[in-house]
Length: 540
Image 1 (cartoon, rainbow, N blue to C red):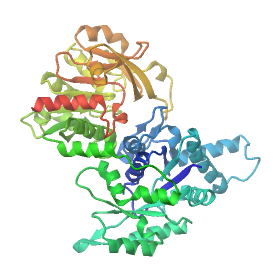
Image 2: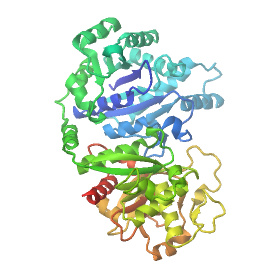
Image 3: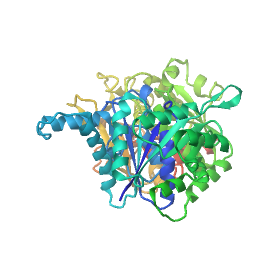
Image 4: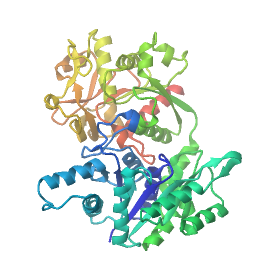
């Protein structure tokens, strides 16, 4: 029988449920179990595709083209769990499905209610993930929001029902809560007590507690928490602030015995844990020497999570190159207003950088600032990496500065541009709905021999994920390549350009896809690895 672990949170949001759930997944995989991860999001949006990055952070894209919550990025970085649209469940999806079935008469005229119809739909989707692969051992289900949120109630009720139906040895509850610190460094357990009480009012008695605290809790505090929450003392764990990296969390939880207690409660016997990849990663972390400063020129710089996977991939690449990667956040609108790029990016400026990366994005704000950054990087031989929009910026910059087409642009920003070097994909022309209609998900690219992209991957056939509506305009291929721009990769039928490179440059590369989604701390993505290697070589 499949085992189910429900991970909930209390007191406040952003405590790290996703990282805690992912860390547990990594530990269980280390013990030889086949793990699947699921995120239940209480928002009524069908998916994260149309949500503002300032409010919700990045959109994580799966192989099958689902636009999901950024927590699935945590699952991908920490575990080997395959991810698809089935692994992201939202309130919007649930109600949309139930209402559609009602309209089709599938409920035989019954009154549709939250219980049982909504909760049955939730349970059905969770169990469907377990049934996808007959070898699945454990499904870890993260419930978004915090206990007490009105929108989370149907998901908690579904969890309560599954724990009752499956039995305590087959379905358990892990509750993550906060231990705040007040004056004189005094730790307070009362919020945790109230949070567990709120869970009990939902009909769920947590089997394990993970206490988010600034420091490791002493034995007396853990015993107090156990006594007041009806949780076994051995089942109280601490997720404390670390001065290294959150990727150390699986090792921290292992030292506390989190996986052992989980397996004991579920009656699972496994082999000894194999955590060699995580230990090796931490050895790389401690061997890092020197610093490279990477300027991220983007549109959504105020919220760190807006480019979450990019930042993480850069960190992974730093581990692979055993160098510290310092992120310099540069608002492209600020660069647009600057007198010259040198004042912001150059060695004499306030933020000298050793490499520049332009990530994905939408809309015209700050585009000219990005073009200015690309020109500066190309002319000064600064390692440059353009992702999605960043590649399109390289094409626009080449048209303006090398081919001297002053009006070179994308039709996304200027419908009337004479030289529209980036244009809307043909299949997008008649689309009016914005949600889930872009070129999305895994697609094949074929690299040309001896290109930088070919060198990085070590193979010509590349599979990466896309999320865009605009592409390199094919009508300008001859003029662009004839003037020196290297077209480094294409779709298998050669109908679309997937990568461009600057000639006579140490590392100037743009890709239309999103490689950041496939990078892991124990396996840095080859493009990010080589980008940081080029920046490190420049510093040395």
